[in-house]
Image (cartoon, rainbow, N blue to C red):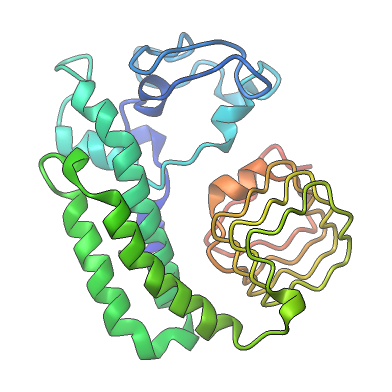
Length: 260
């Protein structure tokens, strides 16, 4: 599966994320909403009534969320909306399908990297297995921890092949860099897996080939930073960060409209 097929397409979805997910009144959401309860901004045609002004209306969390195409996959497989048939199974399936599609996203990226040619057969086999799971009649029965562990081994091998051998100072897995002043930092080929980059200043930083899987990038300042070949970067991470026109992103990702 190519990554273009793992992009969210709201026009072919029954607004599942607007119903299935819980909202908690906070800086991310203007209201409290229980899982299974339609958002009051969801229209009859399954479109958001305030899509163009979500952030000023207090729904920043909606602009960060990305389902990796899980919403339209479930909607297409169901064949009818949750308004036409009981939707509970669709709502329960969304977080599971999203995680499966996230794994497919990482595997698809790994297959795009020329450095991983030696493990392409393993990557393809894993991708085919996960894609087959997404077509199961009930994806809620999938053992996600087992699948994630198996795929993680391949992603670690991918990271090692793409980044090559690095000095200890570039091994920053899980590092707490909350609010750190790192403008212009050299993180080229660094291991930033699961790092806390919340509100960190990474303006003009070099993040090419940096492994960013699971990194928390809420309010990370990426103005002028080079992430053009960053490894395992997702749209959700980009949406949660701050950037500008000078920020270089991988071609598979979109520049968020709220970036200035």
